[in-house]
Length: 254
Image (cartoon, helix red, strand yellow):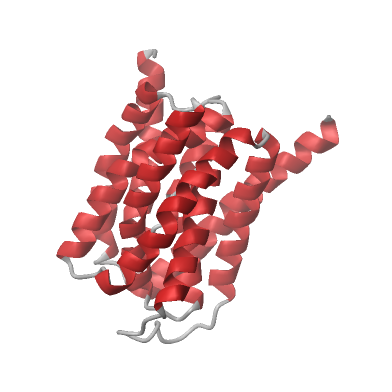
């Protein structure tokens, strides 16, 4: 891999890692940057991104756990649903056509951001609130499948769901950090089985994302929670809209 490409992809991962650690949804930026700016095939971009989330998941979980921002009583049940679903999602991604994956990524990103932006303003979710074990497993399964299918990582799917269910934003982001790791492990196993993983690219991304995630996770405990909500929602709407606009433009000029 040329030095320029290594530097470029590392920068992409650094930005994504910063956003993953800070607001929980930076993974949605990584695949579009790789595919649309870096020229990486969409299936390769998704597989390499999921591999790099092994690192961001470990670092994010460590920092949030150290700050006591992870509800472990909820995490285990989410893992139970997320892990098998992540493996199946990776296999589905390897078989799906590129434009379908792009449309899923764009629609999921924009809809999640819009839902967060239009959610009732005012007090943050109720501190200490929880969900039933079956509900947590189902939410984990949805998160695992959708995340590995699109290469966006667990936070993009999980944070809006938990915020919609009125959990505190910092709790939602903390849980989204913890769910990254098992999803990344099973999705990477699926991508290895399907033959879509570029290990060199994955390691380059992992190097950049590790630094960004560490800084972002520390920043998340400093910024006001209302600011976090606004950053999450606006960023997702803008990125999702750009992806969908690209797909529409491609269809019109084809």
